[in-house]
Image (cartoon, rainbow, N blue to C red; front, side, top):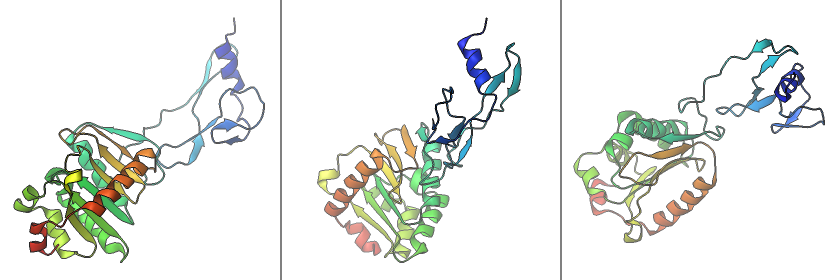
Length: 236
């Protein structure tokens, strides 16, 4: 007995007509487009199938492709949402966004966590963004900057050297109780943690609703932010 699934597989023995946005353009009896889009690059690639003949014999078994990783993701192209769980996940996520940024970085953090924003790789990437062009900038908002200042935070030291491109300010009282921690890259990608007390979060490399929402939040918080006396002493 030939099942509906068998008939479906038999129909996939040819290349299939042209596709657009992952959907069939013709009325041929194919229920799925034979092309999909690569999650990392956004480029079109053949969809993988297992093909069977009328007797149910497997004629071709497609190889499994590796899933897109954070290191492979491309800012402005990758549509995959990455779920973050550990401190290392968050560190890699922040580094990936900073390395790919070409216009701006915006950081909102409670105390500018040393492990995430103070490691050598991240600070170097931030400095590279700041030096790219006169119009590139890095804006940082900290709710409680004293611990970062006292502990000799590397990003604060870098801001002291690049005062016109890296600006660090303290949030106003209106934004001191927010629990979120986030990083925005080129107004396109976002690293977002809803609660700063843990590392559960998400990372996206495309401009979705979360990016628009937190860009607006950051802009309002920046306009209301206050110079920190300790930063003034450091020349920031």
